[in-house]
Length: 403
Image (cartoon, rainbow, N blue to C red):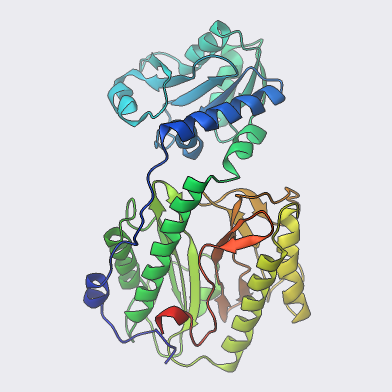
């Protein structure tokens, strides 16, 4: 039996789980004000007079408002000079005030009023001739603002938003570290509850309960549990699977701490790995290590992806996205969004910079047989990179510290 897999129960593992020590504080007002100041500078560099940001992760980043986007417009208008303005439905005022971290001028619209007209009026009032537009806002909003303010020039706000969010502060790194530390412990405990006949649904329910007990914002943010041939599909197959001896197990899950994400994958065998399991797992481990070794300031994102693919090609896998091989990018940025720019993929020439955070997951897929994904995350330092969580040591000891 693979070390650390099986031999326990749901009850024992939940009873023994405690939140990690040193839970970080939530992002405070001073941090939000610093973000707004940086965004103002980047907006000015674009030649725009203001930035508009819609509900979602970016609005939370700048204001503390953790609302998802709906058909009702909730947005921040950040002029290069002057107070920020938050646009909001009138009936949401109380909830907005309870969520807003920054000092802002609040402008309300009623259900029978077009919010784009309010946006246009605010921009005219502030003398804004060019608006940097949040790329995550839907076209419906873009088109309505364009019609309501016909003389307004609109440019992409991507460089402003990504320029602020891509490099994490010490407090953000602490939130990310805490989330990932918790999720890795949940992974260890999930491996220990495995037994013949357990279903993927039972494992998912345990993982959610464990994340909740560990203090995650809302249990599991997501959870994928794949047994056997289902692991050959990067995001799994529909329906339940039941575990049998000799099955490959792939579990990918994460949580949020103050909105910051974990996202960790472990792959191992319930029972004894066969020769092909061992061969593919070892190649995956080597590719993940090569991607990490290539990461340092100034290196373009796409070079990290290529470092992993070079390993696979030396072992006769690929090339490119051909299978057997790696069917997707090597990694993604992570923070308040589980997938955010920049990305470790061919064509993304963004140079790595200190504070950037990425997944490292160059999955290997053998169609109709199985797949192996090892996913850990790293952050860029002044002279290289550092892991948030230590990768698995071997297929026989996926959790060596717990063996």
